[in-house]
Length: 126
Image 1 (cartoon, helix red, strand yellow):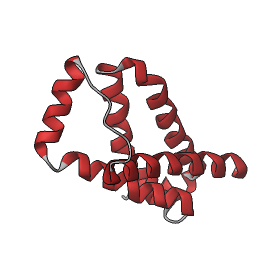
Image 2 (image 1 turned 45 degrees about the horizontal axis):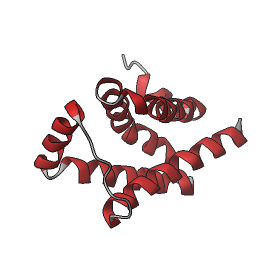
Image 3 (image 1 turned 180 degrees about the horizontal axis):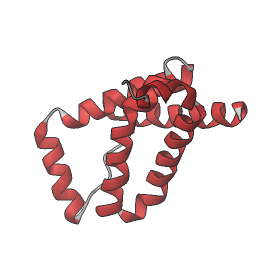
């Protein structure tokens, strides 16, 4: 289980580092978008803060996953971003859905592998 966790954590970290660094350094041209996704993307870009915020979170969590530091916190922080990636792909770009499902399942696996660290969040005080 430890080796699988290390592999999944490293791959997820590398993916997030690649996408965030590519965004900030403009390493890859933005793919042309069409249809409903184009309208959605125009709205995201118009907000001026949402994409840089998501990419900053991806960068920090990617660093966390690659270094193995603060992974419990990174799993929780990146979860809403991954849910949004999954839902955007489900509703607007279903051809990319397999990648989004893989990222979602990888995050769930990492949460499961560190479940002892999360038990206190679900404890009833009474």
